[in-house]
Image (tube, helix red, strand yellow):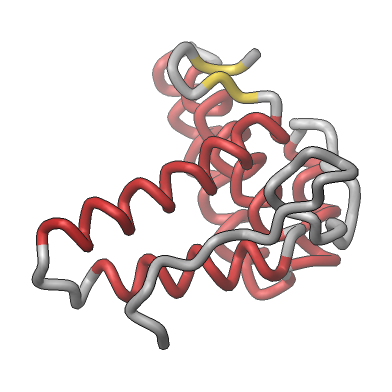
Length: 135
């Protein structure tokens, strides 16, 4: 792995920093649509999705609140937004692994900033305003 910060490809014609075509379209932010998308792009994540969905449903019932389900759907919508771009997902995993090992604070900040940019892009694609909740 390189110790230099990676930069996403830039496609000037489209004006975006990630020119890679997504494997699937971003699904609607419903448990059913997200699960169907995961079955295509990240089938290994389905057991975790199902367990977290059951837990969120139970919390919603216990609290008589939709907030746990909204959090669950938002988190998984962002996960799908990342995973539908294989290069983006691989870069995020590499950055997370490198962040666990880095000792230099300046490099750690660079890694955190790049992770933040990736997650900001994914939030935007998922329709999540991460500063205020779901859009």
